[in-house]
Image 1 (cartoon, helix red, strand yellow):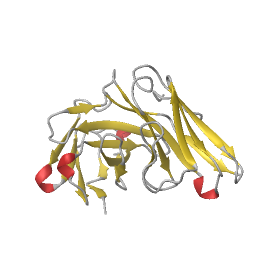
Image 2 (cartoon, rainbow over the protein chains, first blue to last red; image 1 turned 135 degrees about the horizontal axis):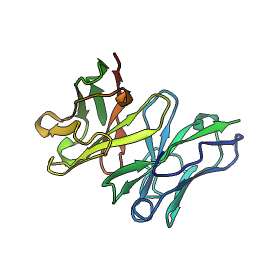
Image 3 (cartoon, rainbow over the protein chains, first blue to last red; image 1 turned 180 degrees about the horizontal axis):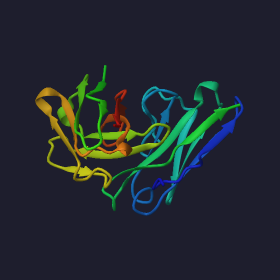
Image 4 (cartoon, each protein chain N blue to C red; image 1 turned 180 degrees about the vertical axis):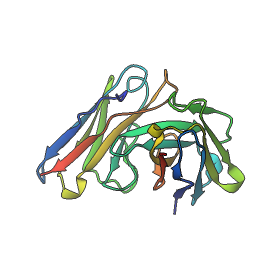
Length: 110
Length: 115
């Protein structure tokens, strides 16, 4: 059971906008920033969003992040087939003194 | 090019030990906190341990505390994970990841614990 809660799956058609939620608690999402990672099949995770909404260089602006209270969201607009991947949220947990991850959301592009 | 390359994985019997290494290049290794994260087959990501840039501050997940030891050698641009008393549930791909945002990841090394 993951500390952060994500839906196990999400889907959309090309061009659509999809959102993935991440729910935590006051010791993690509520008091620290949230990062999002994309893991394409058979590859290592890649940082997609950091500090709740910031994008590393090279990440398309189709990807956006937000946070409110103990919940965060990742939005992907203009969905493309290459976006089909697993997405994970993560935050530092002050009580556990370590990083905690969501269980991951498998995004399918129909 | 910023790069992290893990090595040292393999097949080990339950109760055995293994030492993983992570070689860093393309950035000032000594300036960055480093982490180990693992992923069991078909499962999600699990953070294991973090070490500060100077090696003085270390933290572990409860699942590995007392069995795994993280360390680093800034002169060799290398991060290590000594794994003892290995169990079947430690079977996973082990990744090293850079920094407080886990911003750069290696490709991982597979550890299989089985008799």
